[in-house]
Length: 492
Image (tube, rainbow, N blue to C red; front, top):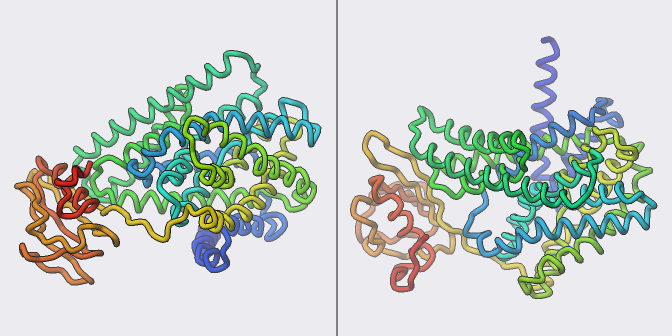
């Protein structure tokens, strides 16, 4: 009990330092995730002397953090952004993983003299891109929706097949013709479980009259966590179930959706910070020196050979321009996930697993620095980056159960075609009205002659019956302007 204040104080200081590291990383142009690793190393045996060398606990905590990161990624991903890239994203997260494992394994078998099973284990560990790294880098890089959507789907889904491959190879399971069937079952069952929990959770949350606003975000994240545990208990892919459930929930008509997304984003940051600090704490700088050469060799194989080949082969049906394929080849960001996956063979006592963990640690640091710093310039060089892309309006809802009505809070984003539209031209369905506009911090009751402007916040009161029609109309005008109906824009 006497140690509790010390532990809480140290935890609070580390969390504050990690939050401040975000601003430092932006100024220095470094990925903040590396600074979190640095904080962990500083706290570890080479710094303040905290010794932490439990691979099983590290693996368990790492997977728990990964579940939170996937939940945040799914909840904050807009279906409209990833739908055009659905086929490419699935191909990158399945076919490309298989190709990457095979190519990396074969190359490392030849270059490092590893036996075939252990070489393929290296390939499986390195096949997964990192959701946290992809979400943090791409969403601010100005890349087009198709490429961003494909990479987001890949990073959210490919953890599942990579995890299956690592477990199979680490446990010594016989590799025969039944293995693809097993993997297909786990992925299909994980998908079904995720869809089931996502739709059921959204249905229940829309009809639940919870006593406090803050309970809705908690309940939403809890649904994603239960989807993961259900998937694992049913011998399916819990990671895929988590991401799919979060993706469905994030695109459902959730009460207090804005609060839920803000809570999920904060929880995602907390998971990232905790995960990278934990991995930095586990690392031993004295061992990393011996892992530099194999780490650099494996990194070069993944970056220059396995990733490009896997992208080219998996994208054959989609006929992507070479510029986009070049960007996809370079954008397979590695982060904490390969390190977490490398803990699985270490906790199973696989010979040589410690060397694998150390090499992956070195590889992640090098590739994060290299790819994170060059993605933006590469996208601009290839003509794929856009200066700015308008975002859809934000619509948040709060149910008024006893009145059979709902309050919608709408924020008009810069670039929206709602800008300049008169209130009389908005033509909301009967049963809905805009009761308040907040402009530059000042609220007022609008008239029919009021013109909407960028950054306005609207308070819309609507009956539950026409609530969906109201949101569709708002989104239609947001996308196509006052003549949305004539242009065939329905807002769906």
